[in-house]
Image (cartoon, rainbow, N blue to C red; front, side, top):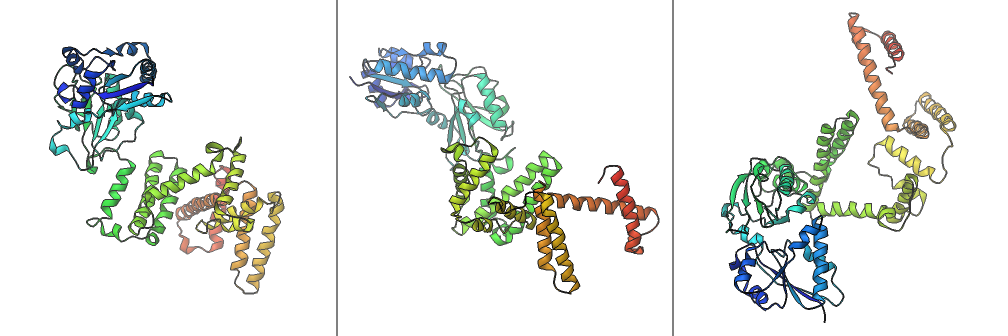
Length: 489
Protein backbone atom coordinates (compact mmCIF):
# COMPACT_ATOMS: atom_id res chain seq x y z
CA UNK A 1 0.00 0.00 0.00
CA UNK A 2 1.37 3.41 -1.00
CA UNK A 3 1.50 5.87 1.90
CA UNK A 4 -1.05 8.63 1.34
CA UNK A 5 -1.72 11.75 3.40
CA UNK A 6 -4.52 14.21 2.65
CA UNK A 7 -4.10 17.62 4.30
CA UNK A 8 -7.15 19.76 5.11
CA UNK A 9 -7.57 23.17 6.75
CA UNK A 10 -9.94 23.40 9.69
CA UNK A 11 -10.01 27.17 9.36
CA UNK A 12 -9.59 29.87 11.98
CA UNK A 13 -12.24 28.56 14.40
CA UNK A 14 -15.89 28.65 13.39
CA UNK A 15 -16.93 25.20 12.00
CA UNK A 16 -19.19 27.09 9.64
CA UNK A 17 -16.07 28.11 7.71
CA UNK A 18 -15.28 24.51 6.74
CA UNK A 19 -15.60 23.96 3.01
CA UNK A 20 -18.07 21.30 1.81
CA UNK A 21 -15.18 19.28 0.40
CA UNK A 22 -13.29 19.39 3.71
CA UNK A 23 -16.41 18.38 5.69
CA UNK A 24 -16.96 15.38 3.41
CA UNK A 25 -13.29 14.32 3.71
CA UNK A 26 -13.46 14.61 7.51
CA UNK A 27 -16.61 12.45 7.61
CA UNK A 28 -15.16 9.84 5.28
CA UNK A 29 -11.68 9.60 6.79
CA UNK A 30 -10.62 6.12 7.86
CA UNK A 31 -8.09 7.74 10.13
CA UNK A 32 -8.18 11.41 11.07
CA UNK A 33 -5.29 13.11 12.91
CA UNK A 34 -5.53 16.71 14.11
CA UNK A 35 -2.38 18.70 14.69
CA UNK A 36 -4.02 19.91 17.91
CA UNK A 37 -7.30 19.31 19.68
CA UNK A 38 -7.25 22.96 20.82
CA UNK A 39 -9.58 24.02 18.02
CA UNK A 40 -13.37 24.63 17.92
CA UNK A 41 -13.76 22.13 15.07
CA UNK A 42 -12.64 19.38 17.46
CA UNK A 43 -15.86 19.90 19.43
CA UNK A 44 -17.86 19.85 16.19
CA UNK A 45 -16.22 16.55 15.19
CA UNK A 46 -17.23 15.06 18.53
CA UNK A 47 -20.83 16.21 18.05
CA UNK A 48 -20.79 14.71 14.55
CA UNK A 49 -19.49 11.40 15.97
CA UNK A 50 -16.35 11.63 13.83
CA UNK A 51 -13.44 9.96 15.59
CA UNK A 52 -10.05 11.62 15.57
CA UNK A 53 -6.64 11.64 17.20
CA UNK A 54 -4.41 14.63 18.03
CA UNK A 55 -0.68 15.25 18.11
CA UNK A 56 -0.83 17.37 21.27
CA UNK A 57 1.40 14.89 23.09
CA UNK A 58 4.30 15.70 20.77
CA UNK A 59 4.28 19.32 21.95
CA UNK A 60 5.48 18.20 25.37
CA UNK A 61 8.27 16.02 23.98
CA UNK A 62 9.94 18.60 21.69
CA UNK A 63 12.23 21.50 22.55
CA UNK A 64 11.25 23.83 19.69
CA UNK A 65 9.01 24.07 16.65
CA UNK A 66 11.64 22.73 14.25
CA UNK A 67 11.91 19.55 16.31
CA UNK A 68 8.12 19.40 16.66
CA UNK A 69 7.46 19.73 12.93
CA UNK A 70 10.06 17.08 12.17
CA UNK A 71 8.50 14.73 14.73
CA UNK A 72 5.02 15.35 13.29
CA UNK A 73 6.14 14.61 9.72
CA UNK A 74 7.98 11.40 10.66
CA UNK A 75 5.05 10.09 12.73
CA UNK A 76 2.50 10.85 10.00
CA UNK A 77 4.48 9.06 7.28
CA UNK A 78 4.94 6.05 9.57
CA UNK A 79 1.19 5.90 10.18
CA UNK A 80 0.37 6.52 6.51
CA UNK A 81 2.40 3.45 5.59
CA UNK A 82 -0.22 1.40 7.44
CA UNK A 83 -3.32 3.09 5.99
CA UNK A 84 -4.26 6.37 4.23
CA UNK A 85 -4.90 9.20 6.67
CA UNK A 86 -6.23 12.74 6.82
CA UNK A 87 -4.08 15.35 8.56
CA UNK A 88 -6.03 18.41 9.74
CA UNK A 89 -4.31 21.72 10.49
CA UNK A 90 -5.73 25.12 11.32
CA UNK A 91 -4.29 26.96 8.31
CA UNK A 92 -2.45 25.16 5.55
CA UNK A 93 -0.88 28.40 4.28
CA UNK A 94 0.97 28.99 7.56
CA UNK A 95 1.63 25.52 8.97
CA UNK A 96 5.35 24.74 8.81
CA UNK A 97 4.87 21.00 9.29
CA UNK A 98 3.52 20.71 5.74
CA UNK A 99 6.84 21.72 4.22
CA UNK A 100 8.61 19.09 6.34
CA UNK A 101 6.02 16.49 5.29
CA UNK A 102 6.81 17.23 1.66
CA UNK A 103 10.59 17.10 2.29
CA UNK A 104 10.35 13.70 4.02
CA UNK A 105 7.87 12.19 1.57
CA UNK A 106 8.80 8.61 0.56
CA UNK A 107 9.41 7.94 -3.13
CA UNK A 108 6.10 6.10 -3.40
CA UNK A 109 4.25 8.51 -1.07
CA UNK A 110 1.38 10.80 -2.04
CA UNK A 111 0.67 14.15 -0.40
CA UNK A 112 -2.68 15.75 -1.25
CA UNK A 113 -3.72 19.23 -0.16
CA UNK A 114 -7.30 20.50 -0.18
CA UNK A 115 -8.14 24.19 -0.32
CA UNK A 116 -9.69 25.75 2.76
CA UNK A 117 -10.44 29.01 4.53
CA UNK A 118 -7.27 30.58 5.97
CA UNK A 119 -6.76 32.72 9.05
CA UNK A 120 -6.02 35.58 6.71
CA UNK A 121 -9.45 35.25 5.10
CA UNK A 122 -11.20 35.30 8.47
CA UNK A 123 -9.16 38.16 9.88
CA UNK A 124 -9.33 40.31 6.79
CA UNK A 125 -13.12 40.04 6.79
CA UNK A 126 -12.98 41.98 10.09
CA UNK A 127 -10.59 44.69 8.90
CA UNK A 128 -12.35 48.03 8.24
CA UNK A 129 -12.60 48.81 4.56
CA UNK A 130 -10.74 52.09 5.10
CA UNK A 131 -7.61 50.13 6.07
CA UNK A 132 -7.64 47.93 2.98
CA UNK A 133 -5.31 49.03 0.19
CA UNK A 134 -4.55 48.10 -3.40
CA UNK A 135 -1.01 47.01 -2.44
CA UNK A 136 -2.21 43.54 -1.44
CA UNK A 137 -1.39 41.80 1.83
CA UNK A 138 1.72 40.23 3.31
CA UNK A 139 1.25 37.27 5.67
CA UNK A 140 3.96 36.13 8.08
CA UNK A 141 4.00 33.54 10.87
CA UNK A 142 5.04 35.32 14.06
CA UNK A 143 8.05 33.04 14.51
CA UNK A 144 9.38 34.08 11.08
CA UNK A 145 9.21 37.85 11.61
CA UNK A 146 12.70 38.31 13.07
CA UNK A 147 14.38 37.05 9.89
CA UNK A 148 12.06 38.82 7.45
CA UNK A 149 12.73 42.08 5.65
CA UNK A 150 10.04 44.57 6.71
CA UNK A 151 7.98 46.45 4.13
CA UNK A 152 5.77 49.07 5.86
CA UNK A 153 4.32 50.14 2.53
CA UNK A 154 2.25 46.92 2.45
CA UNK A 155 -0.37 45.81 5.01
CA UNK A 156 0.90 42.97 7.17
CA UNK A 157 -0.95 40.13 8.89
CA UNK A 158 1.06 38.23 11.50
CA UNK A 159 -0.40 34.82 12.37
CA UNK A 160 0.24 32.24 15.11
CA UNK A 161 1.09 34.75 17.82
CA UNK A 162 1.04 31.99 20.40
CA UNK A 163 3.18 33.25 23.31
CA UNK A 164 3.73 36.57 25.18
CA UNK A 165 7.50 36.36 24.62
CA UNK A 166 6.94 35.89 20.90
CA UNK A 167 4.54 38.85 20.92
CA UNK A 168 7.29 40.90 22.56
CA UNK A 169 9.79 39.93 19.88
CA UNK A 170 7.29 40.86 17.17
CA UNK A 171 6.63 44.23 18.82
CA UNK A 172 10.35 45.03 18.93
CA UNK A 173 10.70 44.06 15.27
CA UNK A 174 7.78 46.26 14.28
CA UNK A 175 8.97 49.17 16.44
CA UNK A 176 12.05 49.45 14.22
CA UNK A 177 9.80 50.92 11.53
CA UNK A 178 6.53 51.94 13.13
CA UNK A 179 5.58 54.42 15.85
CA UNK A 180 4.69 52.57 19.07
CA UNK A 181 1.51 54.67 19.26
CA UNK A 182 0.37 53.48 15.84
CA UNK A 183 -3.02 51.76 15.97
CA UNK A 184 -3.08 48.08 15.00
CA UNK A 185 -5.77 45.37 15.04
CA UNK A 186 -5.31 42.51 17.48
CA UNK A 187 -7.30 39.33 16.79
CA UNK A 188 -7.74 37.37 20.07
CA UNK A 189 -8.02 33.62 20.29
CA UNK A 190 -10.81 32.00 18.29
CA UNK A 191 -10.57 28.68 20.16
CA UNK A 192 -13.33 29.39 22.71
CA UNK A 193 -15.38 32.17 21.14
CA UNK A 194 -16.17 34.00 17.92
CA UNK A 195 -13.36 36.37 17.07
CA UNK A 196 -13.65 40.14 17.39
CA UNK A 197 -10.86 42.52 16.43
CA UNK A 198 -9.44 44.83 19.10
CA UNK A 199 -7.94 48.20 18.27
CA UNK A 200 -4.84 49.03 20.28
CA UNK A 201 -1.51 50.89 20.02
CA UNK A 202 1.42 48.79 18.90
CA UNK A 203 3.04 49.09 22.34
CA UNK A 204 0.27 46.94 23.90
CA UNK A 205 0.61 43.95 21.57
CA UNK A 206 2.57 41.91 24.14
CA UNK A 207 0.41 42.93 27.13
CA UNK A 208 -2.70 40.83 26.43
CA UNK A 209 -4.06 38.11 28.72
CA UNK A 210 -4.06 35.15 26.36
CA UNK A 211 -2.07 33.97 23.35
CA UNK A 212 -2.40 30.80 21.28
CA UNK A 213 -1.94 29.55 17.72
CA UNK A 214 -5.13 31.34 16.55
CA UNK A 215 -4.07 34.84 17.69
CA UNK A 216 -3.22 37.23 14.83
CA UNK A 217 -2.14 40.84 14.40
CA UNK A 218 -2.91 43.23 11.52
CA UNK A 219 -0.66 46.23 10.81
CA UNK A 220 -1.98 48.64 8.17
CA UNK A 221 0.30 50.20 5.60
CA UNK A 222 2.02 53.30 6.96
CA UNK A 223 2.37 56.41 4.78
CA UNK A 224 5.96 57.43 4.07
CA UNK A 225 5.70 60.59 6.13
CA UNK A 226 4.57 58.66 9.25
CA UNK A 227 7.42 56.14 9.44
CA UNK A 228 10.05 55.99 12.16
CA UNK A 229 12.53 54.18 9.96
CA UNK A 230 12.70 53.24 6.30
CA UNK A 231 13.76 50.35 4.12
CA UNK A 232 15.17 50.02 0.61
CA UNK A 233 11.75 49.73 -1.04
CA UNK A 234 10.82 53.08 0.54
CA UNK A 235 13.76 54.76 -1.16
CA UNK A 236 12.61 53.34 -4.49
CA UNK A 237 9.08 54.58 -3.82
CA UNK A 238 10.34 58.08 -2.96
CA UNK A 239 12.34 58.19 -6.19
CA UNK A 240 9.23 57.15 -8.14
CA UNK A 241 7.33 60.03 -6.56
CA UNK A 242 10.07 62.61 -7.12
CA UNK A 243 10.52 61.69 -10.79
CA UNK A 244 6.81 61.13 -11.43
CA UNK A 245 4.50 63.42 -13.38
CA UNK A 246 3.60 65.38 -10.24
CA UNK A 247 7.04 65.20 -8.71
CA UNK A 248 10.02 67.53 -8.43
CA UNK A 249 10.95 69.46 -11.61
CA UNK A 250 14.68 69.26 -10.80
CA UNK A 251 14.65 65.51 -10.19
CA UNK A 252 12.67 64.85 -13.38
CA UNK A 253 15.15 66.59 -15.66
CA UNK A 254 18.33 64.88 -14.41
CA UNK A 255 20.44 62.62 -16.66
CA UNK A 256 23.40 60.31 -16.12
CA UNK A 257 25.67 63.13 -17.29
CA UNK A 258 24.16 65.80 -15.02
CA UNK A 259 24.34 63.46 -12.02
CA UNK A 260 27.91 62.34 -12.68
CA UNK A 261 29.56 64.99 -10.48
CA UNK A 262 27.24 64.25 -7.55
CA UNK A 263 28.19 60.57 -7.54
CA UNK A 264 31.85 61.55 -7.25
CA UNK A 265 31.17 64.21 -4.61
CA UNK A 266 29.08 61.90 -2.44
CA UNK A 267 31.70 59.14 -2.61
CA UNK A 268 34.38 61.55 -1.41
CA UNK A 269 32.16 62.85 1.38
CA UNK A 270 31.62 59.26 2.53
CA UNK A 271 35.40 58.77 2.59
CA UNK A 272 35.73 61.95 4.65
CA UNK A 273 33.18 60.60 7.14
CA UNK A 274 35.23 57.40 7.43
CA UNK A 275 38.29 59.47 8.26
CA UNK A 276 36.32 61.37 10.93
CA UNK A 277 35.39 58.12 12.65
CA UNK A 278 31.80 59.29 13.20
CA UNK A 279 29.40 56.33 12.56
CA UNK A 280 26.28 58.52 12.36
CA UNK A 281 27.89 60.84 9.83
CA UNK A 282 29.13 57.86 7.81
CA UNK A 283 25.63 56.32 7.75
CA UNK A 284 24.27 59.65 6.49
CA UNK A 285 26.90 59.97 3.75
CA UNK A 286 26.51 56.35 2.63
CA UNK A 287 22.81 57.12 2.27
CA UNK A 288 23.74 59.92 -0.13
CA UNK A 289 25.86 57.48 -2.14
CA UNK A 290 22.99 54.98 -2.22
CA UNK A 291 20.63 57.71 -3.41
CA UNK A 292 22.90 58.35 -6.39
CA UNK A 293 22.81 54.66 -7.34
CA UNK A 294 19.01 54.56 -7.10
CA UNK A 295 18.80 57.86 -9.01
CA UNK A 296 20.90 56.55 -11.91
CA UNK A 297 18.88 53.33 -11.98
CA UNK A 298 15.63 55.31 -12.19
CA UNK A 299 16.98 57.47 -15.00
CA UNK A 300 18.01 54.32 -16.88
CA UNK A 301 14.62 52.71 -16.31
CA UNK A 302 12.89 55.77 -17.77
CA UNK A 303 14.93 55.23 -20.95
CA UNK A 304 14.34 51.47 -20.96
CA UNK A 305 18.03 50.55 -20.57
CA UNK A 306 18.16 48.96 -17.10
CA UNK A 307 16.58 49.17 -13.64
CA UNK A 308 17.68 48.77 -10.02
CA UNK A 309 17.03 45.02 -10.24
CA UNK A 310 19.60 44.77 -13.02
CA UNK A 311 22.14 46.66 -10.88
CA UNK A 312 21.60 44.29 -7.96
CA UNK A 313 21.65 41.23 -10.22
CA UNK A 314 24.91 42.31 -11.84
CA UNK A 315 26.78 42.75 -8.56
CA UNK A 316 25.36 39.53 -7.06
CA UNK A 317 26.46 37.56 -10.11
CA UNK A 318 29.88 39.17 -9.97
CA UNK A 319 30.38 38.45 -6.27
CA UNK A 320 29.28 34.82 -6.64
CA UNK A 321 31.51 34.29 -9.70
CA UNK A 322 34.57 35.99 -8.22
CA UNK A 323 34.23 34.15 -4.91
CA UNK A 324 34.54 30.72 -6.48
CA UNK A 325 36.34 29.56 -3.33
CA UNK A 326 33.04 30.12 -1.46
CA UNK A 327 30.37 29.38 -4.08
CA UNK A 328 32.38 27.10 -6.35
CA UNK A 329 35.09 24.45 -6.33
CA UNK A 330 38.17 26.69 -5.98
CA UNK A 331 40.23 26.61 -2.78
CA UNK A 332 41.88 29.69 -1.27
CA UNK A 333 43.33 29.45 2.23
CA UNK A 334 44.81 32.97 2.50
CA UNK A 335 43.83 36.53 1.63
CA UNK A 336 46.69 36.61 -0.89
CA UNK A 337 45.35 33.50 -2.62
CA UNK A 338 41.90 35.07 -2.74
CA UNK A 339 43.30 38.23 -4.38
CA UNK A 340 45.20 36.18 -6.98
CA UNK A 341 42.14 34.08 -7.75
CA UNK A 342 40.03 37.25 -8.03
CA UNK A 343 42.41 38.63 -10.65
CA UNK A 344 42.36 35.37 -12.58
CA UNK A 345 38.58 35.24 -12.63
CA UNK A 346 38.35 38.93 -13.52
CA UNK A 347 40.61 38.41 -16.54
CA UNK A 348 38.52 35.48 -17.73
CA UNK A 349 35.26 37.37 -17.13
CA UNK A 350 36.41 40.42 -19.12
CA UNK A 351 38.30 38.41 -21.77
CA UNK A 352 41.59 40.19 -20.93
CA UNK A 353 44.12 38.08 -22.83
CA UNK A 354 47.21 40.29 -22.49
CA UNK A 355 48.70 42.22 -19.59
CA UNK A 356 48.46 45.41 -21.63
CA UNK A 357 44.69 44.87 -21.82
CA UNK A 358 44.66 44.40 -18.05
CA UNK A 359 46.35 47.79 -17.61
CA UNK A 360 44.00 49.44 -20.07
CA UNK A 361 41.04 48.03 -18.17
CA UNK A 362 41.83 50.14 -15.09
CA UNK A 363 39.02 52.70 -14.99
CA UNK A 364 39.79 56.09 -16.52
CA UNK A 365 37.27 57.61 -14.09
CA UNK A 366 39.52 57.04 -11.07
CA UNK A 367 41.48 59.93 -9.54
CA UNK A 368 44.80 60.18 -11.35
CA UNK A 369 47.00 59.17 -8.40
CA UNK A 370 44.81 56.18 -7.62
CA UNK A 371 44.74 55.06 -11.25
CA UNK A 372 48.51 55.40 -11.56
CA UNK A 373 49.01 53.17 -8.51
CA UNK A 374 46.59 50.54 -9.86
CA UNK A 375 48.25 50.55 -13.29
CA UNK A 376 51.67 50.08 -11.68
CA UNK A 377 50.36 47.28 -9.48
CA UNK A 378 48.95 45.47 -12.53
CA UNK A 379 52.32 45.83 -14.31
CA UNK A 380 54.10 44.41 -11.26
CA UNK A 381 52.04 41.20 -11.57
CA UNK A 382 54.26 40.15 -14.48
CA UNK A 383 57.50 41.35 -12.86
CA UNK A 384 57.68 44.80 -14.51
CA UNK A 385 58.66 46.64 -11.34
CA UNK A 386 61.54 47.68 -9.13
CA UNK A 387 62.38 45.39 -6.26
CA UNK A 388 62.43 48.15 -3.63
CA UNK A 389 61.52 51.79 -3.10
CA UNK A 390 65.22 52.62 -2.84
CA UNK A 391 65.79 51.21 -6.33
CA UNK A 392 62.92 53.30 -7.73
CA UNK A 393 63.93 56.57 -6.05
CA UNK A 394 66.61 57.62 -8.62
CA UNK A 395 63.85 57.66 -11.26
CA UNK A 396 62.32 60.64 -9.45
CA UNK A 397 65.58 62.57 -9.74
CA UNK A 398 65.87 61.61 -13.42
CA UNK A 399 62.34 62.84 -14.17
CA UNK A 400 62.91 66.04 -12.16
CA UNK A 401 66.01 66.79 -14.30
CA UNK A 402 63.91 66.31 -17.44
CA UNK A 403 61.31 68.78 -16.12
CA UNK A 404 64.12 71.26 -15.45
CA UNK A 405 65.43 70.79 -19.00
CA UNK A 406 62.00 71.57 -20.45
CA UNK A 407 61.66 74.69 -18.31
CA UNK A 408 65.13 75.93 -19.28
CA UNK A 409 64.29 75.36 -22.94
CA UNK A 410 61.02 77.25 -22.39
CA UNK A 411 58.98 74.27 -23.58
CA UNK A 412 55.74 72.90 -22.12
CA UNK A 413 56.83 70.67 -19.20
CA UNK A 414 53.41 68.97 -18.87
CA UNK A 415 54.42 65.54 -20.13
CA UNK A 416 57.58 65.44 -18.04
CA UNK A 417 55.68 66.63 -14.97
CA UNK A 418 53.32 63.71 -15.51
CA UNK A 419 56.29 61.33 -15.61
CA UNK A 420 57.61 62.89 -12.40
CA UNK A 421 54.30 62.40 -10.61
CA UNK A 422 54.07 58.85 -11.95
CA UNK A 423 57.55 58.10 -10.53
CA UNK A 424 56.56 59.55 -7.14
CA UNK A 425 53.50 57.29 -7.10
CA UNK A 426 55.75 54.32 -7.82
CA UNK A 427 58.00 55.03 -4.84
CA UNK A 428 55.00 55.58 -2.57
CA UNK A 429 53.48 52.27 -3.69
CA UNK A 430 56.71 50.37 -3.09
CA UNK A 431 56.82 51.92 0.40
CA UNK A 432 53.39 50.42 1.04
CA UNK A 433 51.78 53.86 1.04
CA UNK A 434 48.57 54.98 -0.67
CA UNK A 435 49.64 58.01 -2.77
CA UNK A 436 46.14 59.50 -2.64
CA UNK A 437 46.11 59.25 1.15
CA UNK A 438 49.61 60.61 1.77
CA UNK A 439 49.00 63.56 -0.58
CA UNK A 440 45.77 64.24 1.31
CA UNK A 441 47.70 64.24 4.60
CA UNK A 442 50.33 66.52 3.09
CA UNK A 443 47.61 68.99 2.07
CA UNK A 444 46.14 68.93 5.58
CA UNK A 445 49.59 69.50 7.09
CA UNK A 446 50.16 72.45 4.75
CA UNK A 447 46.83 73.97 5.82
CA UNK A 448 47.67 73.57 9.51
CA UNK A 449 51.10 75.16 9.10
CA UNK A 450 49.76 77.98 6.94
CA UNK A 451 47.12 78.77 9.56
CA UNK A 452 49.73 78.78 12.33
CA UNK A 453 52.04 80.98 10.23
CA UNK A 454 49.25 83.45 9.55
CA UNK A 455 48.36 83.59 13.25
CA UNK A 456 51.99 84.38 14.10
CA UNK A 457 52.07 87.16 11.51
CA UNK A 458 48.79 88.65 12.76
CA UNK A 459 49.97 88.47 16.40
CA UNK A 460 53.05 90.43 15.30
CA UNK A 461 50.77 93.21 14.01
CA UNK A 462 51.38 92.41 10.35
CA UNK A 463 49.40 90.92 7.46
CA UNK A 464 50.28 88.44 4.73
CA UNK A 465 49.85 91.11 2.06
CA UNK A 466 52.56 93.26 3.67
CA UNK A 467 55.25 90.55 3.60
CA UNK A 468 57.50 89.17 0.90
CA UNK A 469 57.84 85.44 0.37
CA UNK A 470 61.21 85.49 2.11
CA UNK A 471 59.70 87.26 5.15
CA UNK A 472 56.77 84.81 5.29
CA UNK A 473 59.27 81.95 5.07
CA UNK A 474 60.81 83.06 8.37
CA UNK A 475 57.48 82.58 10.13
CA UNK A 476 56.89 79.34 8.23
CA UNK A 477 60.17 77.90 9.53
CA UNK A 478 59.29 78.98 13.09
CA UNK A 479 56.00 77.07 12.83
CA UNK A 480 57.68 74.06 11.28
CA UNK A 481 60.30 73.92 14.02
CA UNK A 482 57.70 74.29 16.77
CA UNK A 483 55.40 71.63 15.32
CA UNK A 484 58.25 69.20 14.69
CA UNK A 485 59.48 69.58 18.28
CA UNK A 486 55.95 68.82 19.54
CA UNK A 487 55.47 65.93 17.13
CA UNK A 488 52.77 67.84 15.22
CA UNK A 489 54.20 67.30 11.79
